[in-house]
Image (cartoon, rainbow, N blue to C red; front, side):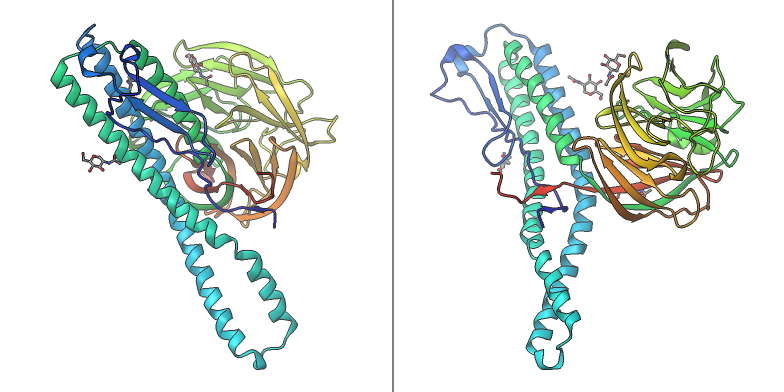
Length: 457
Ligand SMILES: *[C@@H]1O[C@H](CO)[C@@H](O)[C@H](O)[C@H]1NC(C)=O
Ligand SMILES: *[C@@H]1O[C@H](CO)[C@@H](O)[C@H](O)[C@H]1NC(C)=O
Ligand SMILES: *[C@@H]1O[C@H](CO)[C@@H](O)[C@H](O)[C@H]1NC(C)=O
Ligand SMILES: *[C@@H]1O[C@H](CO)[C@@H](O)[C@H](O)[C@H]1NC(C)=O
């Protein structure tokens, strides 16, 4: 077993050492935030060093300090989100861990009664059990990582308290350089969070039925790039002969049916595989392989581009038909189109798109027939394909664009209302949005990191 599929190798830990005037720092250097990509253990390390008190009263700029504080508070919020997600995974890990420990004690029992058990099955089971042994230290590591995250939280809170105290004491500062460094720190934090939150799909739970409305076929979504406070919902009923997009300010407005706006698109759409990404709607123009980018802000089409060679108009739809030939989606890595071409014998092609120009940046050919796919969605650069839109559907195949390799898998998905005409991952919510026979549903996903156990390091 080369790669253990479980759990966060952690990868990233931001150590924020608070207010620590240091004799080793030359006074002129002022405030500093050091951040280094990763230390030997693969952690991200950030260190804040304060200037000597005597220098601090120069160049009073309290506004900048306030902004800095806000940034740190924002980072703290990000950590909160990360923590929530981690806890959800953690519960799953805990369950597995106790199952495994139970299994182990059972084996000890069995071994002590060896005489009664001489079957081949027993040996096989024992071999399997041995394969699982390395999981235990990995789980221990995971628990440590969860602790690190809460420490980080605490340290950010401490740092922000320290900054507040300094503000009160001195009034203000020259923070320009520090500001720059904090920006860098913020970027690094985002990278760390991406690493911590990306992983391989392990489990799909739910659905929760958010609302029951519309025809059997449709799409609903939120913008994964929107700020955490912006929870606008877009709703596009039916797979054909429609160009009205309904907007709701929040999920609760959506549930209550309180529309905030409607948009009348210039062209009809085909299928249900649209996506809203960074304030624009991307959709497949009816009876064509043209992808349209429509800006909600300006209410206009900003870009249109044909997806070369892509089959359209029920040439290569998903199993349910409905002109679902071209599936647009977004994940942690950006915007994607999933479709099929004659050149690839009707098998699925994955293309990463430039969100501004809709140009294809890179493509991957899979060997999975588009017409035999129920739905597909992308998580962290890996495409997951279900084998049906009907009862008993499961995630059956995955293709990693990172390694250009595929894998068969077996992850059940509860198709509560028997017909799935849309299924898309939202990286911000870390959820799958589904249209399940006139019901708008949400699924949670559990992701785990891949831990390489080969002797590369
Ligand atoms: C903090 O986040 C809020 C909302 O998410 C945003 O309006 C604000 O500009 C952010 N502040 C800084 C300094 O980044
Ligand atoms: C945060 O500050 C409190 C009291 O100021 C201290 O007890 C605690 O150790 C600090 N925690 C970290 C992680 O720095
Ligand atoms: C989102 O749009 C803004 C401008 O509206 C742009 O600056 C930013 O780069 C875009 N982000 C992505 C990920 O495309
Ligand atoms: C997903 O998990 C969150 C947090 O545990 C929970 O509040 C939410 O109800 C879950 N949603 C679904 C669709 O299971």
